[in-house]
Image 1: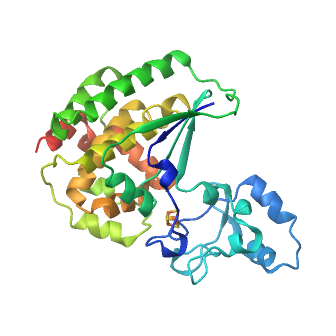
Image 2: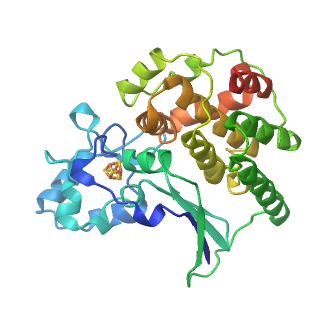
Length: 317
Ligand code: SF4
């Protein structure tokens, strides 16, 4: 299998107890079937087994989750901000979500694209301050997985994405011009159906608030000119890399939504003015809340504030 990953990926390290905004605080953790089966077989006299049984419950989508403790902390997060489950039964038996976070994996059969999410403050800081977004490729011994990807669509989107990469990474042009050019080369895959009238800033007031600091940033946000910075280039590249091809796996993020996410990501950085921490807060709040993310995708498709012509005006403000 061909593995594609950003060049910084291998250097990413979780700082666990020293983390300024642990991923074990603020959201519920899903317990996957394999982990649940392992917990069911644990010796009932073990303290960790008793604890697991006491906090397991179901969310509104029917997923098995661990009920959060006070201040929305994971019930296994101890006072040193370390994981009691990891300590008691080993990191390999924590839920798959915990083991993988903040990594994402887009498996296209013969190629898997992997990366890390802005929702981790360490990953956010690394990506925000990268000198240049570069991808690396390697081959491993895994066989390609079976899939029902439409090969023609996949190849055509991959070609389009390469074109977008060249546009976004061309530092001879201002990032504003690069973003507009990206929207223009995507005009053939954009089919907007604007039906909602929504104020731009209110689109970021998420119904599920994870960290009140995000709401404070939104309340203080101001419309400002987009700056020609490497961080803005990195933000746009992150969204295109992570989402542009995923419609071949799952229809929920179309290429149109992906390019809008890239533009809006730069506008969030510009208006909320929170640097790497601001983008981290946005990502934790949105990319990792099914409820908020579903709403955000719907607004990107339907809301006038995220219409292409309005986005171009905001880029060129
Ligand atoms: S948010 Fe990142 S650095 Fe912090 S505990 Fe989670 S993986 Fe580690």
